[in-house]
Length: 119
Image 1: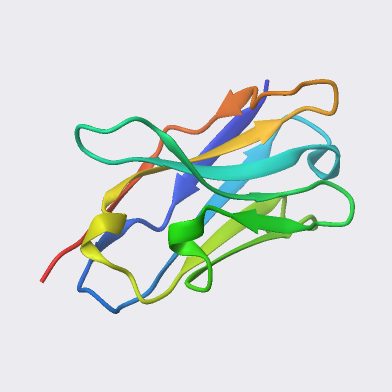
Image 2: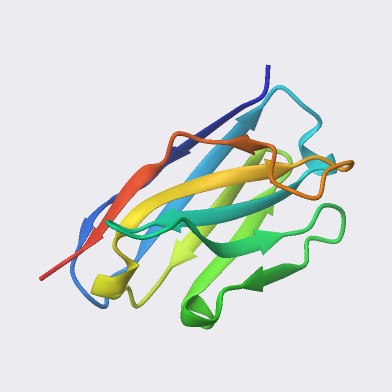
């Protein structure tokens, strides 16, 4: 059974940092592309960052470029989202997701972790 479990959310002030983690189980982790998404109150879920399988290339939504960094540790079956210089508009529930090699969409989702940026 495929499982994704996020952790690391919390309440921070503007300008501070958080690191989210997503622990994966139930498959060959290295074969899956991974991503982070978020859903802010009253808004649609949006893509935040992704990382490819294999070479581990990363890509980002424009508003987080230069502030967020996605990474993966295959030895720990875990991906991370380092979030620096957080802004109030980053407040959302953050989800990690996995895309299987044969799929064009993300197949598996975690339960989400709340990030709140407020002074």
